[in-house]
Image (cartoon, rainbow, N blue to C red; front, top):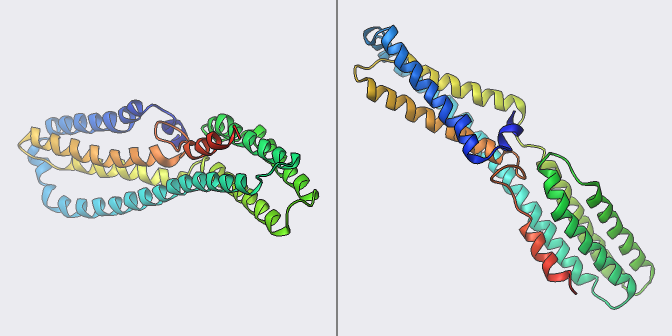
Length: 259
């Protein structure tokens, strides 16, 4: 469900998570106001107010903790892409040379970056990975091994080359892992159930000013559901209207593909 919501356009996401639940809460509040009567509902105001304060705090803590945790993972995905680009840039510098084996490593790395942008990103948007990118990375390792066998580079240089190549691999594995989603299903159940219970609790209250009561219910519903929108939007860092772009990799590719 979270992946389905994450992959929707932003306006559909707002409609499903914010507009529809808020409209439902307002309609139910108005119907209860008419069917039950404001006097009976008002009897719950005093004792219900204390309990609602507890319910609100509990849900606010859960939502805030979840948003912070997901944002940290989203930021981790951005860092992984930056690290992959940085390691690739450093690798281009270390393999610079006129020998054919060095040119082969350069060409293999250019091919890897191009395929990562063109195929890995669309694949990560569907919680998968491109086998072509994996093959391109393996080909880069093979080209680096061939460069090592020529004995034209010192041991220290080759050690740094393989270190940066390993950093590229690690960064790619990190973004592929994060692309599959950050929030466990049990957390989503707790968040959506908590939102429904928190907003639903307002239906037990009564006020003679119906417009003011409906407005307060609507405002509370919007605030709660907007928190869910934030969660859904960044739960899949490489999917949906707000996702991590391959711009750092594209910049490195542009700088070195014509060398």
